[in-house]
Every structure is written in structure tokens, then in C-alpha cells.
Length: 221
Ligand SMILES: [Zn+2]
Image 1 (cartoon, rainbow, N blue to C red):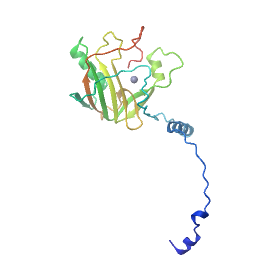
Image 2 (cartoon, rainbow, N blue to C red):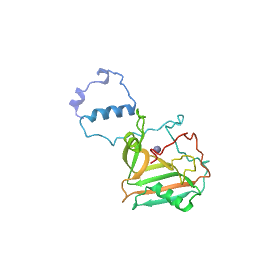
Image 3 (cartoon, rainbow, N blue to C red):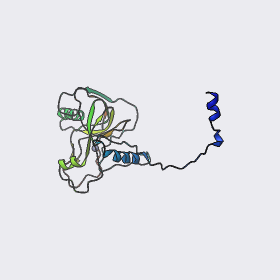
Image 4 (tube, protein in one colour):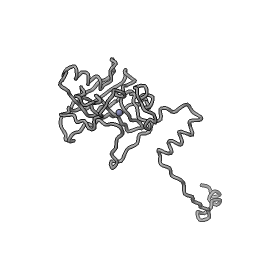
């Protein structure tokens, strides 16, 4: 630094410091506001999705839940890998139908986790509850919000080969990621490069809570 610059600099105590507090909105709120601001100037940002963590002190679910319960103890599990999909069935459907073909009326249930290690998958998240009644699969799909979400995704859930007179959803896996993505798994959209890896265990019994008095098959996908 030259001699001249040093002479021109003000001492710190000669500077006028003024401080004002700033409004600090929560990040999800900011995200919404910014996306709203961008909407008028850019193509629809339909890919935008926000994944938030619910605190452990706040366990909750909406509508329905398929849980695989275990004691959490270490032990042997099934490891299943698959890549490059050549057929029409999704990963879980393929496992479930294979089991059903083999075991027939002996109902088998599995649960655990599978990873989508490469590629992308078609998944939905739920919007706020519909203000009008939903009667058909088309209306369900209109209401749900679908995204093609990139790997890596980690999906947890259950499958069972038959309903066992319990009015069950036969397969149900929800994924999370360590990025922004998460949702209800439907199928992969990248058959050539997709890679799955599952760690599953076999269930001893199935417990149905609060079986509806009248039922339907809408939205079981
Ligand atoms: Zn779901």
C-alpha cells in the first residue's frame, strides 16, 4: 500500500456506522416468494420441489401409511440389485408379482429400503387436500403433483402379495434424498441407465389399522 493511500484512509472511529435490523423470513417462505417473483419472467418451474424434515418430536402422517416395523436389531436381510429395465413393470411390482406367482395363496410380505442409484423416477407428492370429492384415478392424478426426480433416492416401504381380506395397498414406497427430492415411487423414466439396490426383510404378520367400512380401488397405484 502506498504512502498516499494510507494518508487518505479514515480511521475506523471516524466512520459512521448505522445498523438496522432485517426481516429474516423462514427459508421455505423465501423459496415460495422468490419462485413467485420468477414466474412472470421464466418458463413454469414445474420441477421445483422442496423437501423438508419433520422434527422427531412431530410424528404425523396424512391419509394413509404403510409401515414396516422391526426391532431394529442387526441380522441377515435380502440384498437385491437390478439395472437396465427391459420390461414394463416397476421394480417393486416385479418383485411382488414374482413372489405371488411362486407362493400363490400363501401371502408373503416384505419391507425395507431400496435405492435408485442411477437414472430418474416418476414420483408424486400430494397437494393440499382437494376441495372437491375425488371419484376416479384420473381425478386422483389431476390432484397429485408428479415429478421426474433424479437419483439418488432412498425409498422405504412395504409390499404384500395379496390383500388378505384387509383391503390393503399391495405396494407402497416413499423416497427421500439428501437433495431436494422425495415422493411416492411409481416407476423409473430412464430404463437404460436405471440402477436399483434393495435391502429387504420378510414380515411375520400384517396388521391393518382402521380398515374402511366401504372401499374402492381408486388411487392404489
Ligand atoms: Zn404414497
